[in-house]
Image (cartoon, rainbow, N blue to C red; front, side):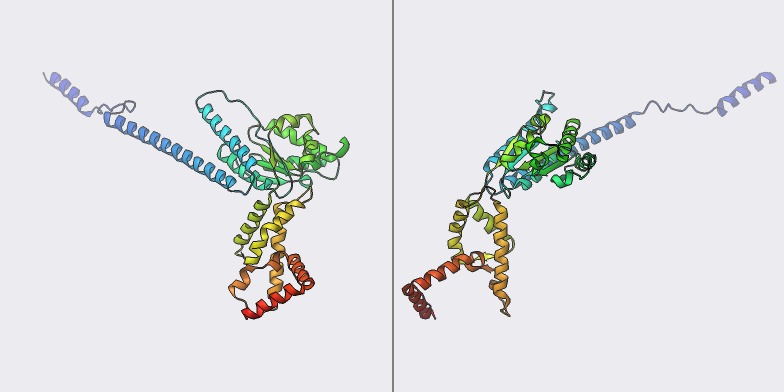
Length: 356
């Protein structure tokens, strides 16, 4: 009997000292499942919100750069072409999202026109638009000409050109006066090595490298025809017309407003006639906005010279541009005409005395 009791006690002791059975970690309880589901839903919602925010920012930035383009003076045909290009890229992106086939077309561009017609400005805007639309990954704008691509010794041009291309990778390389890379008459020149290196980079990096070339209309064909591969890469041409007289006048007035200068009444009256004469007598390589900037800078210098010997100046003195500041030859002409016509000179003198 004692043995039986001892045996039962041993069994009870073993049961009491045994570790409780642990729940398996691999099977979460109901609360934990609900928490995981809520966390997943929250993460998904945050991701969707981020995507919507990024899409809204992208749309706003594209609209901003297009507004900047469309606000430029003149260039109506260029604006139409760029808007058409951007609209096509945007719609193609929508097609890709719906798994629709998208026709391939080159993003490289040829700008041709006289100097001072806004080619560099438009190229910068396009670089920003391409970045927002995902055409290029970084969006940097690298501007150069022949001197930035061509070296003076055999074998160095390819190295120099490649280094510049690498700096523009993921962005836009803008080559001004690109026709200078193509030798006249088809002779051998280091510029041809730069063209060949450039073309290879365009072939090898179609998805993240854009080239825009610019120059005089009659000379750009020489560049395009210097290598058969360039014709297929550059198939979009944008022509930059010369500014007309009204547009040149607007550019001049905007420059004055930017630097807080105002025009006196006599200058305002003669301004349209002057720019009309400028357009009628312009040379073939007319510099457009550069001519206007030169005119403005000389006017500021003449105004400064006119005011220099006066010790005290009012704000009007410092801000008003007069006819003699902008068109001194017109003042000289008027003075000469008055000397040849004593009656008119006397009339003006009497009028001045009466005013006094």
